[in-house]
Length: 112
Length: 112
Image 1 (cartoon, one colour):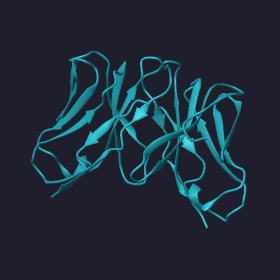
Image 2 (cartoon, rainbow over the protein chains, first blue to last red; image 1 turned 180 degrees about the horizontal axis):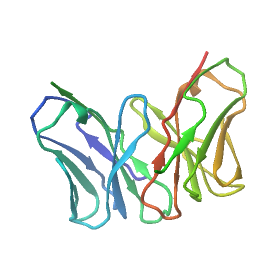
Image 3 (tube, rainbow over the protein chains, first blue to last red; image 1 turned 60 degrees about the vertical axis):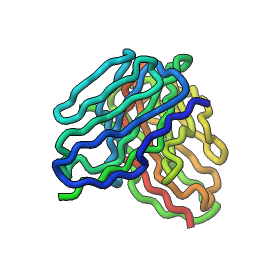
Image 4 (cartoon, rainbow over the protein chains, first blue to last red; image 1 turned 45 degrees about the vertical axis):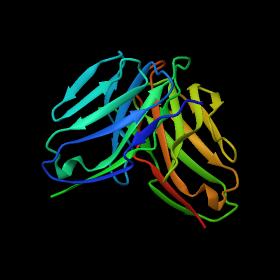
């Protein structure tokens, strides 16, 4: 069973601070996705990374896929209260066309 | 705009009742999924369907069944609800080999 470990589990910061959350595994994934989930809602896809070493930017969010495709990070610059939510990473094993392995998430709170 | 709609957002059922959770997607996706999400456990796959009338067990199928009579609709059935099935249930859909999974808003089920 492939596992994805997310850290930290909880993060509470002030508006304007920067932060990084991590998603790590000992297994290789063919692609990795990041989702944000707001309370009482379903997860919403933020980005998919497929190439080792790939970096994608989405406004103040920067996503990186590790060279070996075993890990990923999400960096948020100048966090805002609207960034508050549960951030989930999900990896697709190389031998599966449909199955995703989800991390347990990082719960981010950005205080005004 | 892509849409996965779960018919019931909040349900309260009694132990032993039969429960139906309905999900409809309007994207003509072949793949549909049912997950449950619990604090500290993350998202766990219950069942997956890759075509009409086709289904595969996920990681935690015990106590659940599914039905897919039409491409756009995927139903989760709890034959005899138990208190340990109290959870948030998420439906999702995707294209075959698609990296992007679209989630519904979730159904909160409480079994008393």
